Length: 130
Image 1 (cartoon, rainbow, N blue to C red):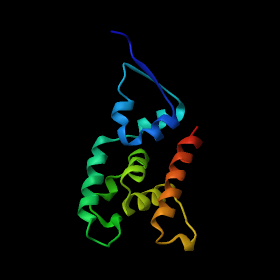
Image 2 (image 1 turned 135 degrees about the vertical axis):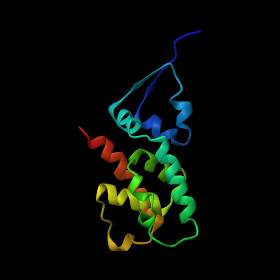
Image 3 (image 1 turned 180 degrees about the vertical axis):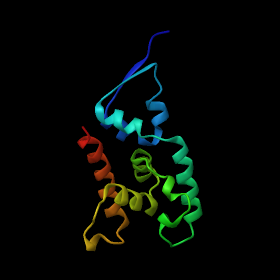
C-alpha cells in the first residue's frame, strides 16, 4: 500500500462538483488557494438546512428569505454546489444577498441567466480573496 496524495485545483473541484467526496478521498490533499477557500467554507450542517428549506418551499411562491431557517445560511461553497447540481431560487436569492449582486431589470425572472451569473460571481469571489 502506498501513500495516496491528490492535487486539487479550482478546475478539478468544478469538474467534480457533484462527487466531491470521491475527489477529496486521499491520504493527503494539496490544494490551490481557490480550492482551499472553497473547502474551508463547506458546511455539512448547512447542507441539511438548505435541503429542509428547499423541501418546505417546494410548493410555495414566497421569497425563501422568509423561511425561519434562512438566517442560518452562510456558505457560498454549499450554494455553488447547489447552483451547479440542483439549483433553485433559494440559491440565486442567497448569492445575490450575500455578495450584494444587482442584475439588470431584463434578467428578472430569467432563472438560467441569473443562475449562470451567480455561479460566475461565486467563482470570482473565491478568486478575489486575498
